[in-house]
View 1 (cartoon, rainbow, N blue to C red):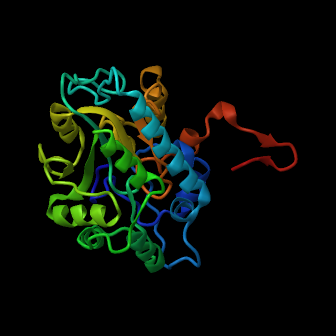
View 2 (view 1 turned 120 degrees about the horizontal axis):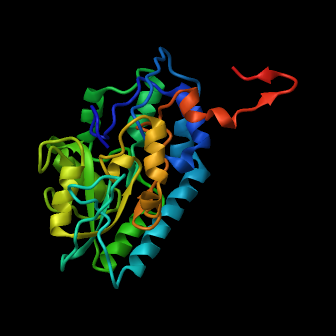
Length: 299
């Protein structure tokens, strides 16, 4: 993820208006800069996207399903493993991959809403009615995992990787200043040890950028990355750019579509990120509309 905050993409002020629509699309989480929606008062209950991501059985089932599929995929990669990191001169519309050579195998994870759920921060944001604040998020990063929890199935998946000799690596846009607390938060959540610059990469590491491709290239220089896991398309490549229609076309083109569940594993996040974008024309194609014979055309 990338944007103004450690989690990545710039977030809307509050996103109740768009979140409800994306609950229905949560299994297809994709991204583009989100729409900003101003809300002056705290709602009486959590917004729909938060209800889904942080509280629903459906989201938990999707998490377990995804981490189970990841573990099964890694089991199958004992022989003939291949890198799933796009080469430095490649892009989603012209994919080519880094070479593995004899490098040891690894799986790269995003952190926020991929390994851990930021319950403490998100509840404070929702209840306050103030929306995202970069300074508040920075203070949350320094809280050492006081009020977060692992995604269902994530701890078990990371442990299974280590048992197989596969190194779990975290590539997150949390700030480098929070390295020690990120390590502590991951340990407290049950993920074991990580080391900054070795198995934990933060915003600005390697190339000074918030985008992740530079860090991915450095990780691929040291490891054979056989799988990647994230909740934003930027967790797989910075090349997923453009409007929602263009990004959806990139994600579903045959060369990329074959990677979903087969090296690239995406988790649902209807709360924030690049998937919360798109006007009526982008979300509902002109040839897929219906006019109710009684009520007429929807506005």
